[in-house]
Image (cartoon, rainbow, N blue to C red; front, top):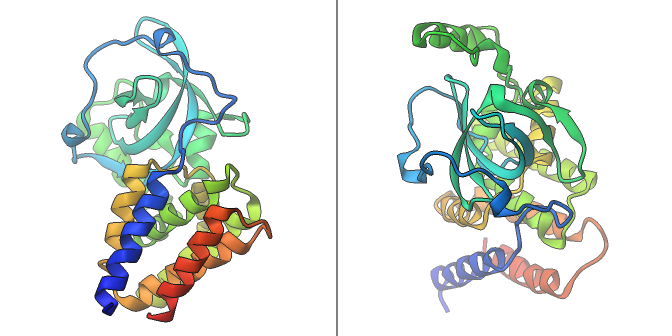
Length: 280
């Protein structure tokens, strides 16, 4: 079997492996479709606008939100965020409706993570390096929102953004791998953070400040990408040079071995990882 054939075999194995994983909301989070008002039309992923993006690296961030709609109906739902825009609207996949939806920042009363910890909406986005108060003001004109977004960037409040852009695919793949056993512990988060820092420094010459590291750590902690997102990331990584792929696989190996407990599925993955690393 040629090297290319081996790579294609491993690529297919990875996709199948991630495709079998369950990335639905935490088991304790109960969502009944009937309890979530179905107002307006769903937002199809292909129709999500590309203009006015404040942070396009939210894809994979998965949390619960307490949301109040225009009629005052309050609901709790689990979402996978995609993008945040200067008009204060988040586009996200809603697990209750199993469709893309749009949510206004000011209507999100609070956010909660997969451990059930409640976080103030503004504080949640600040943890991700995004100050929503700078651009998502209710009643602002389009010009005012653009000026606010520009001021936000000029103030240098985009800690960790370069790393989130540069290492996005690798971080999502590793985060999915970390959650494969149903948990995502701090040691695994630290390993993924190390990957993002090393990858950005080694291949793009981008260093990380302490503030960058804090933001990237929180970003990783909330990552729970959907299988379709992970598949796209695997495809993207396999378009990268061999040295970049090797670094990711080395960190994937560290991640699987980090908790000292190897499931049969992880054991199979380790065999495939070692085989792939031997030809890189």
